Length: 194
Image 1 (tube, rainbow, N blue to C red):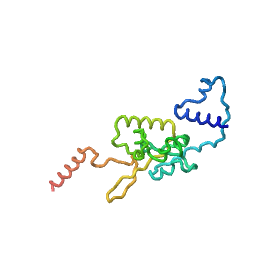
Image 2: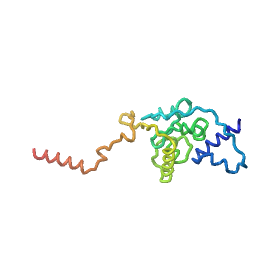
Image 3: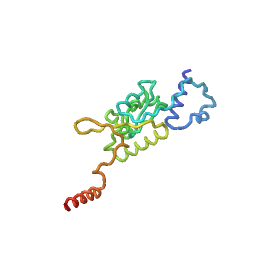
Image 4: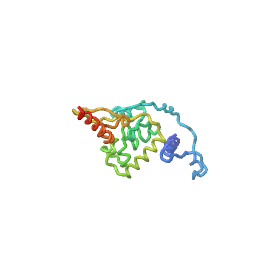
């Protein structure tokens, strides 16, 4: 029975790392021996649940510590359901520290340092940003996007407000200065006439 379990683990690793079907290996160097086709009885994964906007604090609840909850991870503020790769992102897996977090900076830097487990990508160089883009493409093609991370931004008075990238609207300072100057000139003309 241990051989069957080992083969199943190897098949999952082959698919996860290469994207290739392990069925291709049956004719490769096996000496003509076939591997038993006994499939272990596992429950099928539930369909991904759309989460919508989730705070970073709420995202931490989906780190795999509760096997009844989906396993989630974010890249560049986009949350993906990585439950199907629990052996990698779940407890005890080699990438478990990324689960329940926006791991953009860590993935870009290929880092396992706790201070890099953040969605903050400021200060990254072009090679790191390219690496992050590759990770994002991989996740987009392999996993279902289930939500976005709601970011907290400091506001006056020391409190915080939540926002997402989509909510950020241009401010007056970001608008072309000609439009602002033009409005001021019209207002000044009206004042001079009186």
